[in-house]
Length: 333
Figure 1: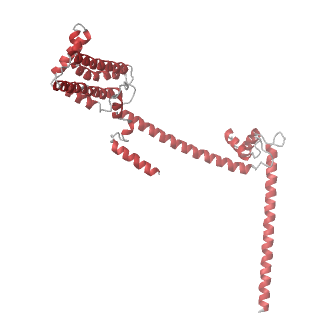
Figure 2: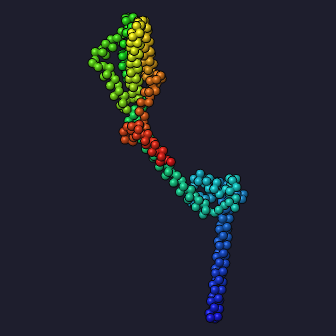
Figure 3: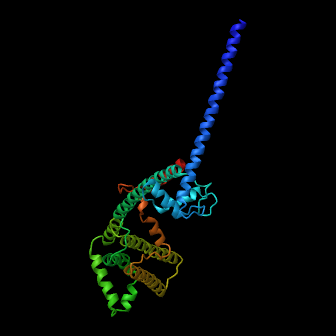
């Protein structure tokens, strides 16, 4: 009915009026609150500004906050506060940059929380680094790649006796021509003793090959064991080439002059002797003798490294390592 409609309209207008009144009161409260905050900030600014120059220096900010918060503050934290609120960047806070003690307290608490988080992360990273260092040390203990001791240096020379004694077959002419040379006489006696052992060459080869696979032996010794084996194998080829050339010459009805065979044998023996001398001197100085062309690089490729072992010290075959690297690359993608 018209009467009911009129009453409803009047109620709506009354509610709108009340809402408007409430908004006005809220705005007034907000203005009053803002005024109180402004007055409080201005009052705090005057208290902090002890020299009354209209600006708050770093020292004034630190002293004022310590007095207001009743606690001693770290200079770095106060400096961070100064940098956060110093909009002009002049190293001081003007009144329009001063935000009040409460905001300084809130920002300071946030800085403290951030520092604690960073400290926890740093401690966690340090712990991980320590664990990695322990793991690396454990692997190094498994694989003896440390600096050789004096004993290691001396022992590392001994494997070269193997190719040196086997090379005496090529040095027989020099021994015969120099019967008074004490070095050659000593080698000849040692060679005689060496040959009295049944299968001496095979036993020496097998022993060096097995021992060179022991990761607990110093790397210099293991390297020289492998290199001695390669040098001894290399001695096989000159003899083979000489035999083939002799057969070819005989088939062609030619006679190879003895002087050629003698010079060839002397050259092979001299080359091996110089090689062993170089390797021995380097080893005694603690330097890996890895400059022998065609041989040293092959030995280096056979030497195990730390990454060839897992966390438990078990050897990982090359194929499994390559498969793991491929899987890691796929996961990174």
